[in-house]
Amino acid sequence: MAELILCGRGGQGIVFLTRLLGDIASARGLNVISSETHGMAVRGGSINSHLRIGAFSSPLIRNGHADFLLSLDATETENNKHYLKPQGVIVENSPLSSENGVLRVDAARLAREFGRVQLENVVLLGFASMIEEFPIQSDEIKDRLALHPNERVRAMNLIALDAGAKAGLARRC
Image (tube, rainbow, N blue to C red; front, side, top):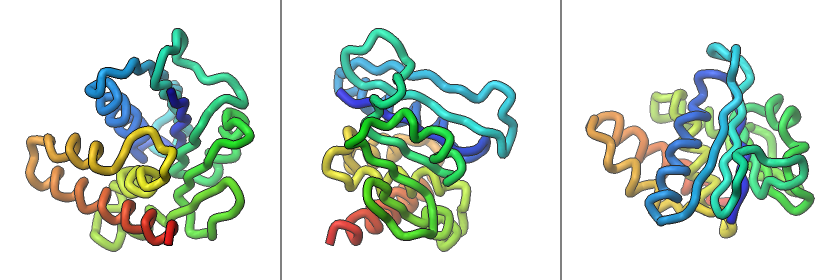
């Protein structure tokens, strides 16, 4: 069982990540329930989603219960960290250094390096997938992304995932 909060700004791909993780867990035969909050959010507006994997009856995660907070924007980390349980982990897109309980990767910079800043979400996911306790592993994500029918999109997603995973492995060393 796992409870994840994914947050960022409109246009950063939070909904895509939530559906991707949910699809992978569902394909494993696990129960998945999710909820998105983006109401009036247009590109740049606040977005968060709740993803619960396991025997849950409500899609919303209570304050202090999330295992992971994946954040594509530091401001949104602050707005959503109340969901995280005391031993939970924040995975944040940021150029700052990691600190206790907050693992950071400059996903935007890595995505820009291969010419697609829009893929910072997949870079962040690749990074998170290298955390031992993370509920979805990099190989599972890679297998799901490899199913995309558009060859160019498929290739760019796999490059982004690999860039994040390499950054995650470097953090572990």
